[in-house]
Length: 139
Image (cartoon, rainbow, N blue to C red; front, side, top):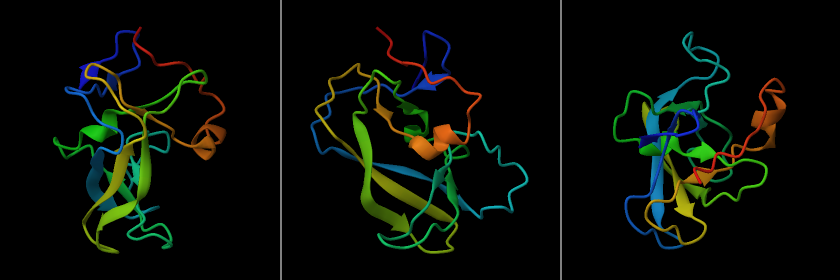
């Protein structure tokens, strides 16, 4: 985890070569939607939790109190950038449980020293028209 050199906050950079298909887990405390007074609606580290494929959303995962949950620092790629990790259909944890995880995988080979980026989804950006989407590459 590093500070982005262009001021985009913290970013996640591969420490070693990650082969295509490499799996990792975005994990954190499961919170109930609508009942967390501390939830910032613009928070980009929280992730909707689906405890199994085909299930409806069951709250969200908050990785911030979990020091080992480094995927929270994977940025959203900009309009001219390609995401190199993506969420798949595997999840960990129980419906209404206190902790959960969603599995991600490398969608291409990622060389050591490369920033990990994923797509937040068009709905995330649609709900935040005041934010300007920017390329987050570090040159």
